[in-house]
Length: 116
Image (cartoon, rainbow, N blue to C red; front, side, top):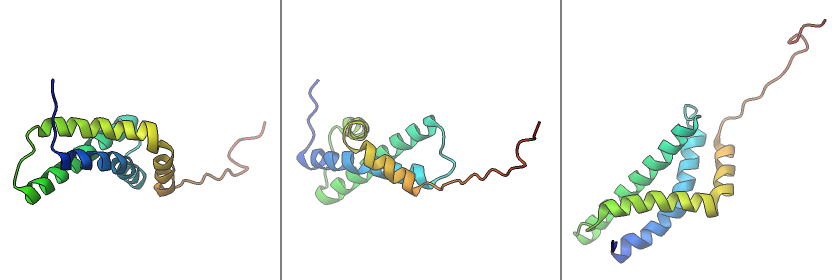
C-alpha cells in the first residue's frame, strides 16, 4: 500500500504532531468535565481530526486542490499526535495540563474523625 501525500500537508502533519498534544492538554486541563481516561482519549482524537480538517481547508483554499488521500492524512495525524505525545511532548504537555487544571485544596478539620 503506497501512501503519497503532497509536500505541504506532510510538512503540516509534523507541525500538528507537535501542536496537538499541547492543544489536548489545554482542553483537558481547562474543562472540568473531562476526567475519565476514555474522555481524554476522545478529546485527543477529536482535536487531531479538527486540526486536520483545518489544514485540509487551508490547503484547499491556498491551492484549489483537494488532498487526494485525505483519509490517510486524518489517520496519520491521529497516529503522529499520539506518538509525539508518548515520545517527545509527554512531560511538557502533562505539566501544562496540571498548570491549567483547577486545583482542589482539601483541609481536614480535627472534628472530621471521631475520637475513640
